[in-house]
Amino acid sequence: MKVSWSPLAIDRVSEIAEYIARDNPEAAKSWVDIVFEKVESLKSYPESGRVVPEINNRAIRELIYSNYRIVYRVVEKRISILTVRHGKQILPVDEITA
Image (cartoon, rainbow, N blue to C red; front, side, top):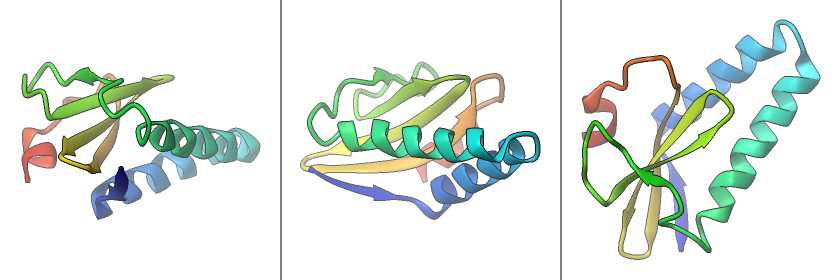
């Protein structure tokens, strides 16, 4: 399986890490490391995340880590990380269907 990150997902990870780093730079680094580890695990278990309830499409899934949703799409032998959002934020459908 090949994993690719959308520019939006990379931006979101950076923004979240910057926010966490304001209080605790080490926690921010650890958070980013774990997000990337979780995404790497998708190579072996691409359907391990749940189907995103807002979409109800088996190809659009999410991993939950801490208070965050890592939203991704699985198509054939490819995993695309679409976005990363705080769980309390509304998930804009255009971020995951574009």
